[in-house]
Length: 223
Image (tube, rainbow, N blue to C red; front, side, top):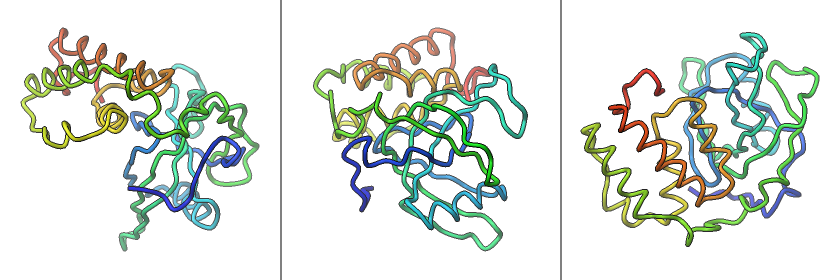
């Protein structure tokens, strides 16, 4: 799914964005994530985003970082996405789809003037995120596919192997990372990987570790 808006670099992105803290939710550049919105503060966030640039920052809460139940400490790196699909359900919920733009680093949180949280962010450390398929040639595709095959065999699930074979390296690696059943810390490691090659290596390593422990996606360490 493409976007009508074009983001060529950090300068095309706002410096302050609303953030949606959601454990286990991983968004990566050009990836898609569906969201089921029902809390009043996040319904307000969607309303406001649709009136403006439609950008929302996905970020995971850091369970070890302190904060409160209503305002947990956040990991310092998240990924901004643009709302590309929106639907009302008739029972007070919104169904939206975000397409990833680029990762950001949180500089500080803006004092609350809305029901939801807003942060001042810096996209500069992740400038390569704006270039589609950057670093694809360095990805160990065979290693990624082997790890996937091993996991599929252990978990006894079906996958679209034809789609896997046809997917470019960036789409393949990022989709597998986003769909992976790993926990919050593991998903944060995938998000913060320096580049696509490193992300693929982390994905392979995490999969091998989980398989060695006998995990198949239902272990307590997984989401």
